[in-house]
Picture 1 (cartoon, rainbow, N blue to C red):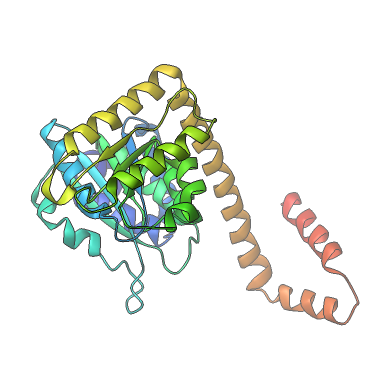
Picture 2 (tube, rainbow, N blue to C red; picture 1 turned 90 degrees about the vertical axis):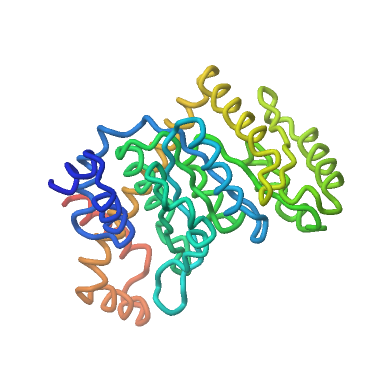
Amino acid sequence: MDIVKDLLNGSKLALSRTITAIENEYEEASSIMRELYPHTGHAFVLGITGPPGAGKSTMTDKLARAYRNMGKTVGIIAVDPTSPFSGGAILGDRIRMNSLTLDEGVFIRSMGTRGSLGGLSHKTADAVKALDAFGKDVIFVETVGVGQSEVDIVKAADTTMVVLIPGMGDDIQAIKAGILEIGDVFAINKADHDGADKLQAELNMMLDLDGEKLDWRPPIQKVIASQGEGINELVALIEKHYAHIGATGKLAQRRHDRTKTELLELLKASIGSYITKNIVKTGRLDNCLKDIEEHRNDPYTIVHQLMNELLKQ
């Protein structure tokens, strides 16, 4: 396909069109991804998450600059809240990182949540693969918060960084289970604000109680992203974690688990598409509902029959 050839030859337009096809589930998306897949598996993927207002976009901007200073090319996927007007991403992250768009070595793309996770996890993973095939050395996946959907999205990452800020109060308790599960590195942004030391102490206490991460204790770095303070130290910790999981075999295991999850998601999506096309849109679902409501049949028998039909095909 020309679009694949152009992408592999460094066309940013082809890359943009590919991610658009992925996001909007165009028919050619699967064919594009099939051709791109052999060219993936080279980039380092960093997940960046944290509560709204933590300064993730500013942090992403500064980290991208740091990696560019190291001579590495950068791709950024910013998962944005969806605009209620256009259905697209609000693009606030791209506005805040506007100066990066002038750098030929950086590619930024916002992907809208569209009101729900709705397969965004697997779309994000495919967008990461497109950036990987394009040749980006480091790919950032920045999410809108720390809910379950964000936990799913950052599973597309090799290393996950959680950004927190002082003054969250009881919020830290509410999200601690999620962040302890996914955080490999913690960054306390706005560290010049009151409560930064208290937040660091609370995090340390929570990490000390977590016995599951014996081989890697997630480090905590205080940062003032708006001023660029602590960014180089943070990059060093991120690189240290990446080297650690590479040396211990955990990187290979994470990527194995990720491939397994993606495969299962693709299977579920394929089955869902079959049901929509052959059962919902043909009117069979309405007939089945009528049979159930009038007690001529039951939902369990109908599901069994429909699954048998699907498997035979």
